[in-house]
Image: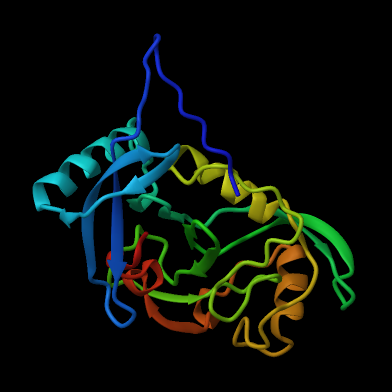
Length: 237
């Protein structure tokens, strides 16, 4: 569990005031909240009877949290979605170096290869990558394809391994996540159908390492749109 430090400017004394209880439905995303005055009785904190939290009170809490957690700065030109603990951006097709350390025909090999346009989706506990057939900025309805990379599962999730990821999820971490992905050692396929071609992913990357163009027409449909991959914003916590 992370340690939380409360820092105040100047000599300010804090005392227990109140507490909030949140009730969440197991079947829906509905939440009910109550606010309870708090007192120290006999040296122990005690919550007194509460009252329903109003929308105005929730708005005040949200405003305070927003000032501490929301991003402020110039917008990254490739970001397509940003929310607390959730970020999505696209990477245009371009040559980039990759490293392999596998037990198949590729073995230990590295080189600059061509890549398809990609979409990365990062959340608090996981990150994913998808490929695009068109080298243009995607929108919510853009159809995604499986990213034909080693260490990537069928659903797009990236096997992190011992890769060091950025500490924060914000605009400034885009290049950090990209570097973590491309500088990792691709060791094995996590999906039997990474690309639609004879010889599969092994033949694909052997050809790419020899200078071939990336065959965008051979990408496999992921059967989801960008909006599907990002998920329902109401799921965020």
